[in-house]
Image (tube, rainbow over all chains, first blue to last red; front, side, top):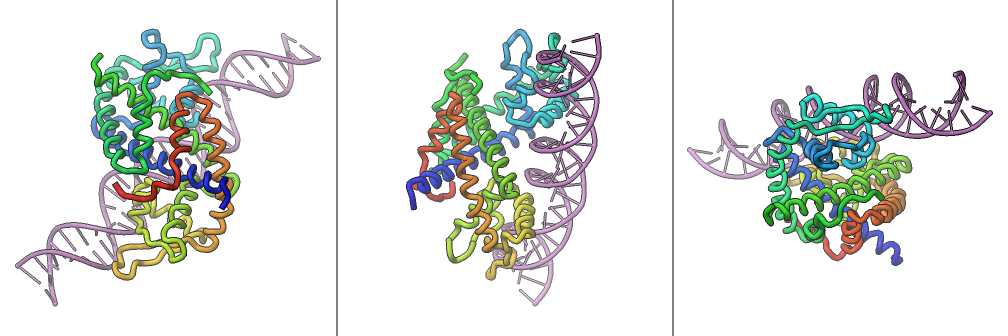
Length: 157
Length: 157
DNA sequence: AGACAATAATTGCACTCGCATGTACTTGCA
DNA sequence: TGCAAGTACATGCGAGTGCAATTATTGTCT
């Protein structure tokens, strides 16, 4: 077995653990948000992302960038936004300078729901991490999640 | 703002980064495996998991445990196994002592396809990690993936 | 100005997923 | 033994997703 093979195996194990942890956390969040606030994990994530953009002045992310932020295809993002708009949590409006672009704002109702759901989300996240830290395969990643903090803000690759 | 709030924000950021990295890697793997070997990322993952169980003697994981390993519901696992069985990559057989239980073996064809796809998978993973390491938000997790190696074997929580 | 390529978002379609339910088998207890 | 409760997998169904094709708008080149 070559050194490269050994490295690949290590990488695959690491990826497997990351994947496992992601799945566990997402399931946990999904349950909590769904039963408590009729929100899927992605819907919460979308509201969170949109509410953070230029706080106070309104949103300035195009659908394209939003799709990238929530790691979803453009089509799925279109429909996700449509669903939330139909529920009155978001509003769409065209970009003034380029009428192809579309911006989205979180409505007051959306902000209210987000504020209401945030404690649920954070508690569920804390819980999922605590459970995961018992698994030795997952513990290193849990530690990394806990280490990273608000210091590292945005910055596209 | 209390200390607890600060911690929650840090946690959410960490989770967001983990989620982002997971999505990026999965998309990358999906593309590579799909176009190269007609396999989804999860199908590859399933073959990989099943081929690793007690190598040589055949598989001994029940559907239930398999579902847990690939982080999928029981129903989705049933259909995933069915798809791969229909393609001749897996075979099902009943557990002798408890005829409710069902075991799965990877067929020679399945092992062959897995062996063929593994380099693609590993290369795509390496590539995705390299791309991700350029993003400061993702870099710590990339480092964790690279740090963990085969040392930490199984162990249920 | 007019035509053609490029970009942003939406829609059609097939596929996978989770939840709730159904079926087969086993275990516990009278 | 016989019947209820529990466990393991499979199936019906509605919902969400990605890919490919479509529509609307902008930029560029002659």
